[in-house]
Every structure is written in structure tokens, then in C-alpha cells.
Length: 132
Image (cartoon, rainbow, N blue to C red):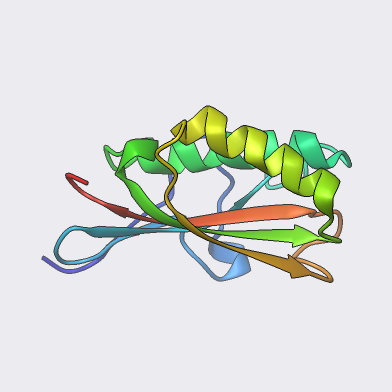
């Protein structure tokens, strides 16, 4: 099996930005590109951090579902927060626990000055394993 790239309906077309949403690699690992608070056209849905986190996790679930996976298959996430502070961490924690309960994946949180597009405040990428 060679790698396959999936750009699911319901998420914007990322090819103009130079990436694919989901890459299934030979074997069991699946890599999900950074998902942010975007609508189907790629526009940021809100200026509000909490709204962006909610939409980014919805987009992550959409990307995973497109290759027959879900949050339970995720073993690692990377989270990126513009202007990271304790309030934003609390919002992120709410979404992490709503998604994974107490069975959280490994995570690296990185505070950043900016993300790829103007208005982006949050992004999450993931590594999933089939049959995790």
C-alpha cells in the first residue's frame, strides 16, 4: 500500500495552501493535518477563541471519519495557540475532556505568535492508529 491522501467533503480544499487534510501511511498510522476553526470554504468561523477551538475539533472529527476513524483512534495531538494564556488553556481542556474523557492522547501544546492565516487563533493536528 502506498500512502493515500483524503480531503473530505465538509472541509475546505487545502491543496491551494500546500497540504492534504488526512494522509494514511502504509501500516496503521494516519496523520491529520492541522485543523482550525474554518468553515467549508476555509474561512475562520469566528474571532472568538472558544468558537475556533470548537470548530477545529469538529473539523478533526470530520477528517478522522473520512478514513473510518474517530477520536478513540488518536494517540497524539499537537495544539497551537496564538497568545497562549491560562484562560485559553481552560477552554482547550474543556474540549479535550469532552472529546476523550479521561483517556487523553499524548499532547504537545505550543504557544505561537501567529498561525498560517490572519485571524487563526487555534490549530490541532493528530496522529491516529487503526485499531488503537
